[in-house]
Image (tube, rainbow, N blue to C red; front, side):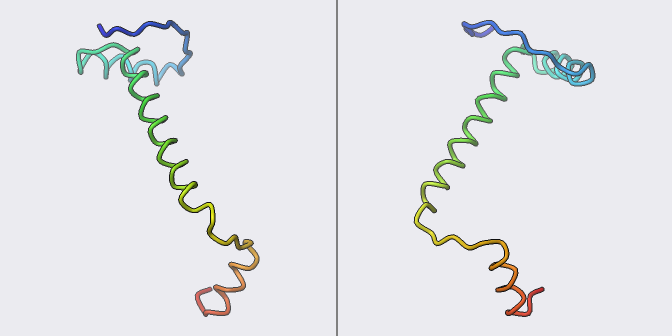
Length: 77
């Protein structure tokens, strides 16, 4: 078992819980470790998304309507 230090209660749909139990058993790890890793991956994706937003902060904005008009003018729709 890992050195996880905080405890929390998480409720899963029965089918998801069953899948987690099978995955944990087949990978010789715990459900807690699987959930911890999934949350870490999710937060890593959030970091990447925020970095992409920061890189594009100075790009000009265009409304959806203007985009559609532009695509129509270019014969793309």
